Image (cartoon, rainbow over all chains, first blue to last red; front, side, top):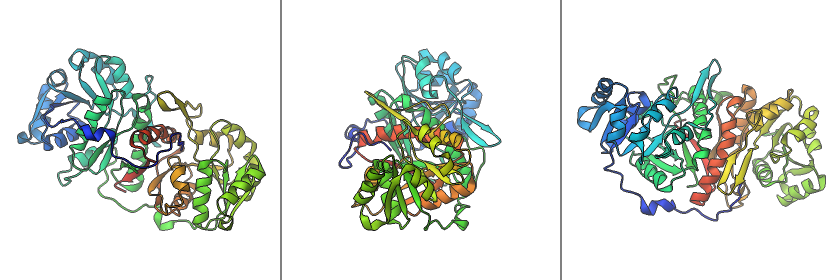
Length: 237
Length: 237
């Protein structure tokens, strides 16, 4: 691969010295009744963050919250209420309807860090493949319809099965974090680091998020071949 | 991420039971005078495979081979001679001219496993970004112009700095291997496994190679931020 900038030695994440305190941030999860949304809600609640599951239906959101354990500090609301009440919002909705939902919540999400973990992936008889996205990626689409939010791409490759597995105390993989706002990516890296086993790794600007989302198709292929719930670790950092 | 096929437990690579014997295969490296090509040539020669460095200039190929150590079983030839003489051919040429070079060698490469490790990446003031490829990926372009070859994508994320570092006895990362010909991907996985520290991981069909190539832009961003030579490991397999 290209090595345009030789780098003599490893060093700790430059952002690590100023890791923001994110333990008290209320995390809203739009589309939080899906497997991925529930999984992330569960892990962040376990880590001690207040969590709000959002859904089109407040009743289903409440049921999902209750299903994850009442004592864990998870509440359920409509997506709109969750977007308004949360400090940081994770977008875990299906790709279909992604743009419309976010556009409808632009006012509630203004000024907030919005974490998009949506993977535009299709399936056919030969397996998974990336869908074409006019904006380049789901995260760039989010940034397009949420000009007043601070959009970060992250958590694309985290298996919901692992997140929801009650036997697993750690989810051992890295989370690639992408965005153009360094404070926002640092915050999301810190959030990822609150889940035992996980590490948030800055992985580029938002314009480089498309291939990270698309790589999910490769992980699906790996999962089929190896009967696994694969994820990634970045080496040498 | 999507989990369309729940899988209860890990299991070894199904291909592992029938790992092909690839220790005697002569490996040709087109564009083998570049850093990536020399690095791969060096590591395969260390592992005991006969290696042929190809270049537009036979003289420069011979010089590169000599520079990697005369006793290591590396020879230098023109790209055409290397393509003809090798059992397996690695394409490590610049993206510019990729199609033309391969088209000119279609006869020599017919029937052979051709490993494309080319990353179509551009650079501007904001860093690296993936170039648009009409065929979807460099590997698919190779398959398009080499209809009689067995094209596999692999070795996209391996740092030439690490490959060429004489202090490093292992290169500890996974190599994502993509292709539509299972015997060919199995062979390339086995080849990757000959380099200490490396593991060849099947990562999908050729149509899913574009995002693997493009992900190199993310690794470049990671390298800049963390002053590293990053690579990937796949977890849970």
